[in-house]
Length: 232
Ligand SMILES: *Cc1c(COP(=O)(O)O)cnc(C)c1O
Image (cartoon, rainbow, N blue to C red):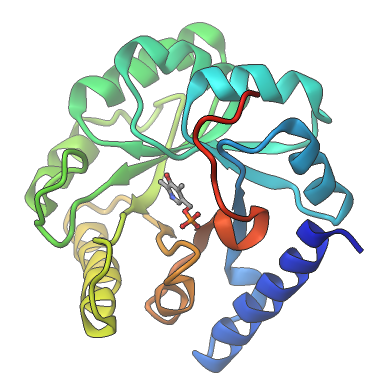
């Protein structure tokens, strides 16, 4: 078995264990394999091991990789998205995780209508309030949901967050649990269903699952150490 297949098996077991031990269905948690910086060959190996959903950060990298791989792969744009990259992101991605402003949401909706594509969107929230460049403040989320027409081509289906790095476990519980509570409150206040919570990475996905994650974004624990200088 390849190293990637072995890693995938191990991570799938840990995901399943975390779900079951928190009283959740295994099928309620989607494992997203974050393949950024890894070549199409590595993605093909994960695909051969049964993985179908992959996350990428940079649109240019996805544009180079996606055409080399089977069309049935489900691509998720997970990183910060610049306005001038929206069209490229929409070309291949069926999910966009880090929608973090009203102008970006409006641009995605306009181009999705023009391109007749219907990706699922997640609003990125900076739950911890730490110095982070990206993510909406919790009180900035409702206005985006209120703006969204019910006929929007790209539905907002949930929230996404990045936990701060190098923080103790109780803080991770607070951040992930905080995103779930915010979701519950927003659903009640706006009536907009937000079933999906994208949270948890290689170092903390089990805690995220305990707190209700429906999508965990796992990169290095599947593909290994990232080298950002690697050519595509
Ligand atoms: C890189 C990345 C991940 C995966 O990180 P790992 O620690 O390698 O699992 C998850 N989410 C986002 C937004 C990322 O950029």
